[in-house]
Image 1 (spheres, helix red, strand yellow):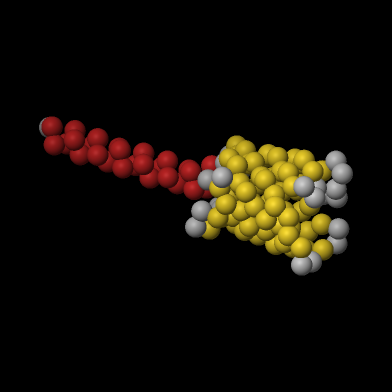
Image 2 (cartoon, rainbow, N blue to C red):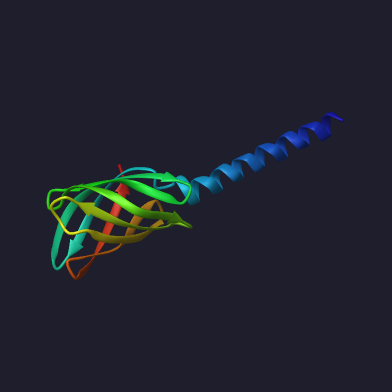
Length: 123
């Protein structure tokens, strides 16, 4: 009886660990602050990103010297992929998409009729 109880405890613990790791990798793994770089038309700009994840919904804030402060809107985070729009008071909105791989974010963005690339690492 004790062996069955111990086996149950170990199985339950293993399932809890797998469940937590799975949820973290699909929902919360980009939660928090990121330091990044936008690259477009031969120019680069440092960018600070803060993502908030609730299920597959993605919100947050963004800042660069070029754009000023902005917000993350219409955001989705699912299966390691993100899409959103970055909206600013003094800059055209930026369509933004990317993926998480090996703990780093990378993707593309489109603004003012031009497409660029971006990368970010967790702060």
